[in-house]
Length: 180
Image 1 (cartoon, rainbow, N blue to C red):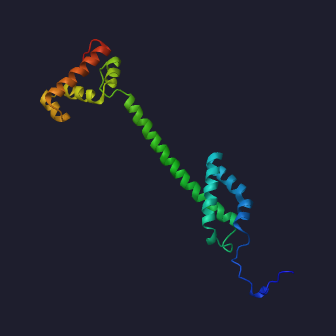
Image 2 (cartoon, rainbow, N blue to C red):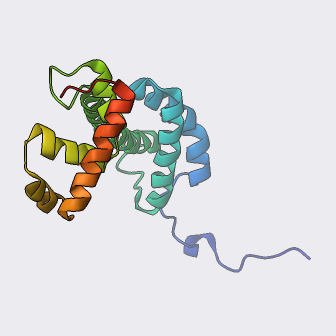
């Protein structure tokens, strides 16, 4: 027996205005959107990522697409443009962070202990622990007395003297004749 449609064509469910399903739109426009993103970014790998993000956003917003306002390709390219602009902004932020890091790393590599020190002494100071460097800076470079340096460090005067003594001994072992 042949199935019969009891609903006449005149009373059929109204069409939503979509000329084609989303899967067809994707298959017809994927290459064009990808080429557009390659052109914008100049990077095939980034363009692949951006294309997937574009079609993900398009899928989520497919119910809002109105074919009377424009072609699907135009709509997809607009989404791709927005995704690419976001990517360029993120890349600019990442590049700034990397540049700042490299500048900071270069400053750390430079002598932070002042001019006039031999390179051997400068390297030996870098090899001290942070606590040892701090006590050397306070007692030798800033010429604080023992009680003042101990107060700055938050330790007792005996511990401060011991730390300074150990730091100077390590410097002497590494450099030989220490003249600060």
